[in-house]
Length: 366
Image (cartoon, rainbow, N blue to C red; front, side):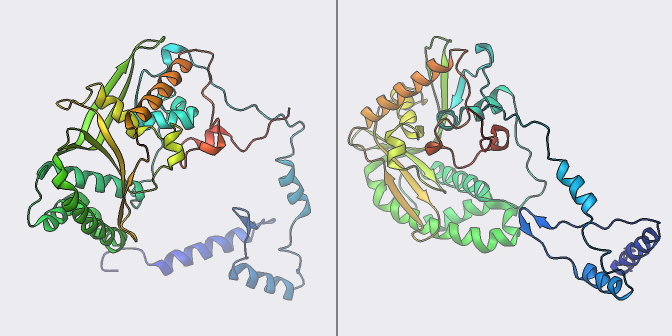
């Protein structure tokens, strides 16, 4: 009252008044959803009490289903003829097809070409909910930015107060998100566990490292029949090792690609970064990758884990993946090659913003 806001009781009274007025019409239809997302629902207490009153005055079937209305509703989906559509197979002209993609988009291209078509040719982008609570993707972004800033501050020897410095940088990166109860109660404790694991790992790993480079931008351009094609990246971390080689690290806050996916070339990010490094695509960094590793940073139990790609010959894996990607570009330089939706269900991406456009659940009559 002091702020001049309407009282909730008044809003309920107005709603009750409007309902009573509408109920005085010659004919009234009351409807409710009997199912929600396929699950049966229970009538509200208000409807059950109304049904009791109507039965007391001899109108027991007043709230029962109206067969005429129910049948009319069924006829909405009763088409005269069902003609299933074939799978989406867009074939845009070569001039509309992208000539530059990032290493992560190359993986999408391998697993779900239609997503590349929707994003880069149609220009479709998802609209996110306003003021939505942050999710795992936002957490991953914050952790990447935190580690980028930390490695840039301390590319060589770690300071004696490394833990407090890492937490200070993290607080700056989390920013106002720490005012949200979910972030403070769940995300921050996870990051503290990640920080403990990471610094313990760094102290044993750094003696073999000359310097660590963070968020290095690189590109590799090669010739194809449709014209030059460029692959870009922003490598999470490149460690220059004492033995003269380089270690490429990809931070993962979610799941890590399986060994079979990496060996099949369907998780090409690290091998492609190795190809970019070998081609001199990172400014100021020349050499070849002698090791490729995922660092999984979950904050769970365990808080972190180093996952080297199990391959005794990184150059061989880089050659294999590079050849596969070049063949992919050549294939899509043919205007007759369609952008199919998930050609192989076994290697389907875990998430896609365009799943509802791909109509994967539809069946086509042969």
